Image (cartoon, helix red, strand yellow):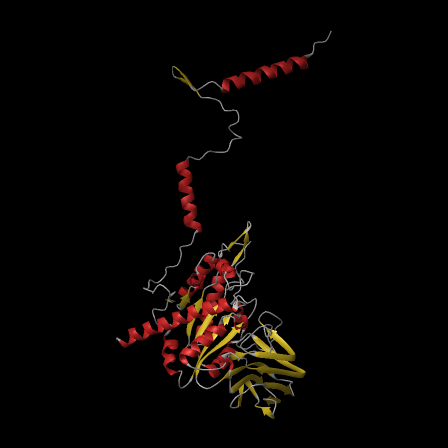
Amino acid sequence: MLRNYLRDAGWLILVLICGIALISFVPDLKIGTIEIKKMDLLSDLRPTKIPIKKKLIAAKKDSVKTNKKEPAQPKKNCQPDITCLEDFSGDGNMKFFFRSLSKTKSEAVRIAFFGDSFIEGDILCGSFRDTLQQVLGGRGVGFVPITSEVAQFRTTIQHQFENWETHSIVSKRNEMHPLGISGHCFVPLPENYVEYKPTKKRSTDFSQVRIFYKNPLQSSIDYVVNDSLHVKTALASSGSIQQFDIYESKIQHLRLSFTETDSLKLYGASFENGAGLFVDNFSMRGNSGVGLSMIPESSLAQFNALQNYKLIILQYGLNVVSLTDSTNFTSYQISMVRVINRLKRIFPESSFLLISVSDRASNQNGKFATYPDIPLMRDVQREIAKQCKITFWDMYQAMGGENSMVKFAEAKPALAAKDYTHLTYWGGKKIALKLVNTLLYEQKRYAKKNNSR
């Protein structure tokens, strides 16, 4: 009879396993000079334990490597209802604008207000312009493009148009159609026209229209004022940006059309009424601000030769912040520093004011709250202003900081739309007044400081 060695081997293995398991429960022993350490059969499978103290030290080192130091904020004694400007230039950046405010009774002082959809339709700029003009003088809405995607809800001017080809920062572009200061270039098509009418708002009255164009060959303008005065005239030929002026005591309706348009490029028109303070709204939906680098330096310089801007305001950031894609915005910071330094070179006698991102909210776990990266974007923009040595205004803080957009949207009347991103006209008026009060407050401080020298 054959013996079952397989069964015997199985019993042997079982005995060995039980023995080793029992040994693992035996504590450390010392018999004479012999030390027996406790066995741990699963030691290779267990995660390595780090003492709590070492964990804290490691975490501290990691935080030093990854967290950027928040940019220093200039200390200013501001009155409670004012969010002061932060001038990183050493108090010299705003001098061009502040000095010019004493001349508004005799000449035009202009502000270029660049931004994204937050300022489109004159929601913020309209009240900003109205308030400054009531204090400093001036009537007229300033620059208006030839066509506009927000024409139907802009309340500061009535605007209609047909048969135009549009090139812009955020749409199709062509080197044959160089962009103007607003980031647009408009090419007239057959049977083109554009009409402008003032509204009942104070700032929309105008008696002078300045039309900006480029016309290397020959073209003509055909315009009708107040449905009675009809004039057709040739436009001067030039390879640089020119202006065509129309004067009437009180313009209630203006219709423009253009013929012989093979080389004609149109950019927009400025609506004015003598001397005073004028605010040109250069909003563009979807622009992060980096797109300003696409505007040729020559175009910007030629516009400035005609406009002589004393203050350039930059409002961007909403199109960069995302709810789901958190980032440190390093590439955006580098790009915007280049954009602003380029603008400073092109506009050497202009003051520069960078306005921070506004608050923005979304539904997070069933409750509307501020985007987590909004404060980070605000801090990055402050650092951009610091690197460029210009002035910064914290609009996020001026609104009320965290969850202020929620309060704006739920106010009666509503100060913000239910997208928890854009202002209503009431909200625009509120923020515009805060910005105006800040500028006038700082202008008085500047005058007092310089008169005491």
